[in-house]
Length: 117
Image (cartoon, rainbow, N blue to C red; front, side):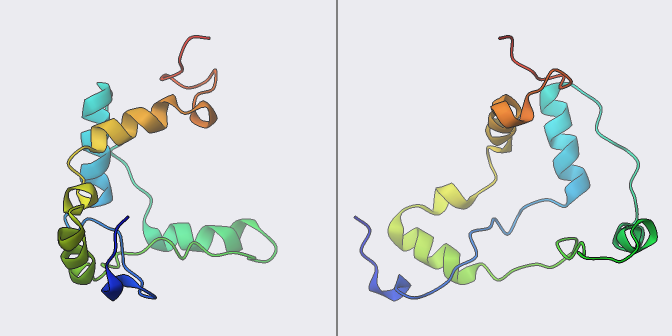
């Protein structure tokens, strides 16, 4: 299928370097669904402190909360060679949001996006 020897035994970040920060992303998705985007936020330091404040001992952390940016130049270069660079972009986040909203796991009787059964 796709034969690119330079990709063997290599790891790549499959991310769009232009992915917006969380609030602009939520605003874009909310606008797509015709609802208001959340305006409030909880500071990261408080989110990280909550498990130890609420539990006798913190067994897990919220390490996924970070402002890290990841190197994607190698990924973009290989994606261009493979002809799949267009698949890495966030141009169609609305279609992704529609897909998430219609998944059975996310559509319950309490969801405003539930599909009729």
